[in-house]
Each structure stands twice: as structure tokens, then as C-alpha cells.
Length: 257
Image (cartoon, rainbow, N blue to C red; front, side):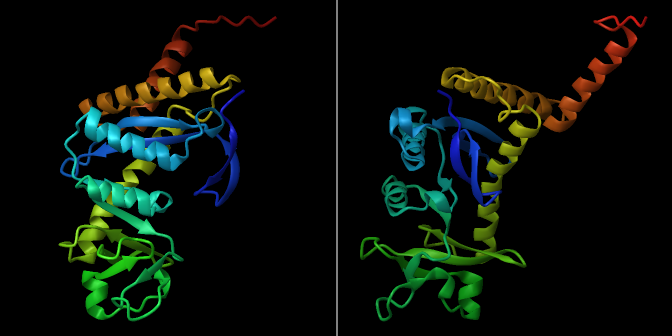
């Protein structure tokens, strides 16, 4: 039995067939370079683990087993659950993540009922510097900082962080732009290495395919960095060289009769 199942696609905004892979990337904020440090196949029929469990396990592994020196955790709204955010906070890590527009919050200090984050009113100061809020279900004493960030003219994100010293919406937005490195990685492994095009039927063969693609990406990314280019140009150059060789000296001779 394979790994393909119906899953929600953020790009398609609907259920599509595919293999679910949960990835963990490390990004150097100074150099903007990034590495994939862990990945897990989402296969609840086999291991009964949700994507949230995979994310927590990868975080704990990076912290306690790999002992990587990181300070900030970025994640999307799918992982912005109370349990995960509190877990990151207890471990002394700063998190930044967007809330879904209907997430219940309170910015009145308990004077008003909880309301959807998208319904909050913003002063000029709050828009520029953020505001303290309490997320519904969080411990009573725990507050987080909320920022309203305009991604495009038609799209707004409500970013929360436990870094209460953060006082700039622009700075919070800049931190969150690092999150898009995961999307860049997704595009590269799909468009240059065909991670989603495995024709194998068994789950083990599909896992092997995914693992080999990730190893190939790691090598190609490092090589592209060394040659001061990108993975797309690197692959194009390899194909161009191969085509020139085949045209000059075909490996399969064709005879026309």
C-alpha cells in the first residue's frame, strides 16, 4: 500500500491526492542560506501520528538530540496550536506564527468577550508596534504580541510571538519572511528533482524515493552555492551538456530504412 492519500493543499485550497511530507528547515538569518535538517512522512494509518506530533518530535530532536543552536521557530497557521506554542515557550524558544482569521483572542485585558482576531480594532500605534493579547485557552498569565501584517493588497496575516520585546510590525514581518524559505525548498525539490513524480507502488519504495530526492537536493544546493548559481541553472547546464554530447555522439544509434 502506498503513501498517497487525500490531503488539503494550501496552494489549491482543496483536497488533492498526494504524499504528505512534514519538513523542518534551518535558516541562517544572516546569510539567508538554509538546510533541511529533518523530514517525516505523514502516514497516520501506519504510525497514528498527526502532523502536529511530527512537528513536535522534530523540534525536540533538533533541540535535544541534534543540539542545534537556534533561537526562533517559524511555522504556519496549521501548527499554531495552544499545545505547540506553549511547548516552544516552555523550552525557552521564541516563536512567530500566523493565526487563522477566526482564532479567538482578547486585547481588552478581560473587559470584553473574546472575538475573532480579524475583528480587532487597531489604533495607529498598535498597527505600527503591535499589541498585547491573550489567546483563548492559554494560561491566564500568558500574553503574546500580535501584529497585523499586510502581505499583499488583498491578504493580511495576524502574526503572534512570545517575544514581548518585539515592538515593530516591520521587523516582525521581516522575521516571518524567513518562513518562505520552506516554500522555496518545496518548489526546488518538485521542479528540479520531481519529488512528487514517483511511480513506485509500495510505501517503502516511495519513502526511499523521497529520501533520495532530499539527499540529491542537499548536494545540488551545496554545489550551486559553491558555483555561485542556483539549482535551476545547475540542472539546466547538466541537461544542456548531456544534449550536446548526445547530438555529437548518440548513445543510441537510429537507422532509417
